Length: 266
Image (cartoon, rainbow, N blue to C red; front, side, top):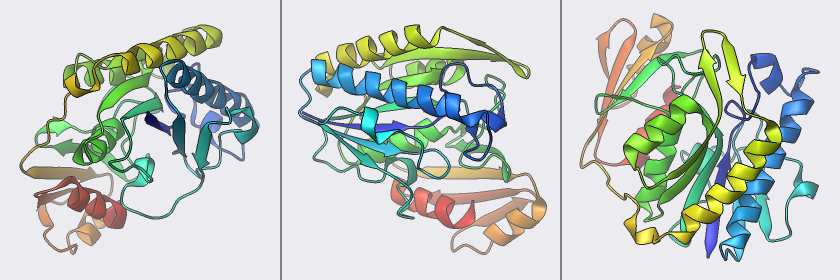
């Protein structure tokens, strides 16, 4: 069994402030360690379920956060960014049996995490995909599904876990934090590690063919930019339509074209 992991930091246990996500800030090191611990827990859970190979995409900011020496020997780590449209799941293909998401977070336009955002914490007010508020999880789970790879596990804030369950109730989730205004309530970091390991093992122990593999036949991406000048710029992308000073609509027949728009316009 080959298992792919995409790891972010804004849904890691205990996190609350942008300083804690910033590689150059003193507060960052604590959460880099916890991000690594949660990824290691997912690896151990996968190995317990029979995985023979694990590939991890370090998918936060610089892509250079996870402490490689802490990973099991069966794991390979993708660091930094290739600049491929697959972004946070670059490296995934049809050879994988399943994908899990660690440290994921609620989308822009939601109120479940002080660090909620979608692909950019500064440029984007919110994104809707086929009328639904769009998260980074949604985009990258759809990429995986386009290769026949089911999303089976997600850890992160309570808001994203609820959205994931609405997408597919079979997916195992671990809610590490819940957000209220600018505050967060967190479970204990050790408990998160325990639950992530157990959750991944349970997720991979199910019949992988039963997970949702639904893909829309058509994609409509509505992006509300925080500044009208960025929307105007994006309006020149082939096929993009300026709906309002801050809003761009882009339509496509596949998720690759959607991710290509995001790569060049966000």
